[in-house]
Image 1 (tube, rainbow, N blue to C red):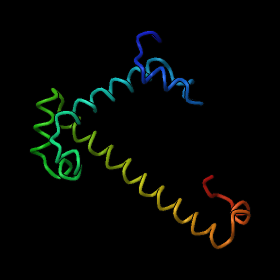
Image 2 (cartoon, one colour):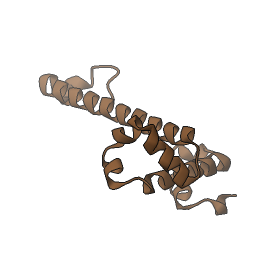
Image 3 (tube, rainbow, N blue to C red):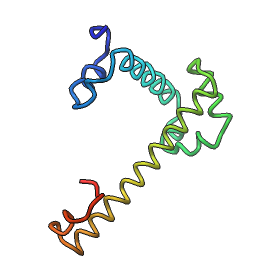
Length: 119
């Protein structure tokens, strides 16, 4: 099964911790990525630049579903997943910014004494 995996799966195996992911899970992830890629490819440039437009428009989601032979629910799930990851990245950015601000106040050595901060 390993030889049927694509380049992404082979690359992912090199990441520490991901070598424990089963071949089946890796193939499912690649299949999911392929679906997402198809959906993004049928979006207009404007939709790619403004994903909120896709999230807010059932008509756009319906068109994307039709052009990629997916259900509207699948497209909506992809949009929701994107929105969730975007929110997590914004939160992480805020945390790291706050950590930099804190480092300015207490110094890098002082940060080591504070428990629970990301490295």
